[in-house]
Image (cartoon, rainbow, N blue to C red; front, side):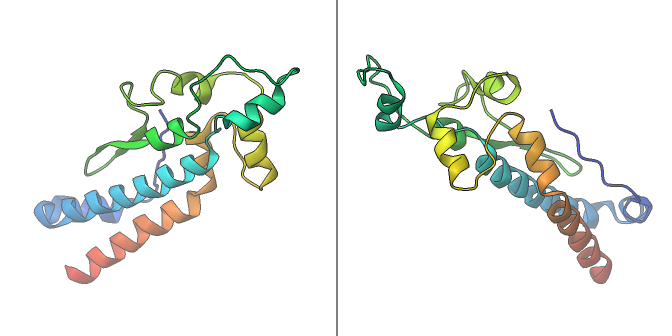
Length: 157
């Protein structure tokens, strides 16, 4: 799990105590937007399986016994799992297409395959720890979303 902390929230705490019914929907909206930013960022950074043609090229004799080639299952499986007023959880459900191997791909040590190497060749920074790197890479965008929603809230109150 990745935790992202926004500091200097004294004003938000004051507003939540003073106008709880008006503030909580805005914070929930901000968390949904933060979730979308991180989800989209992690999809870009997720390693991708090879296509059948890429896999055959990587073999020594070019013959494959594999028949199940579905590149992008892990990328398609990344979801916003839960959204509350003060938090958002992004991950891969266990029962999804990429759920069986998502933990290993995120936390494991491995060499990137031909699909990921092709993506790297196109300038994508794919690899392990894609959720954490998405938060780090999009830190400014996340901060901007939160500040924008707080400013909207201040104008309405």
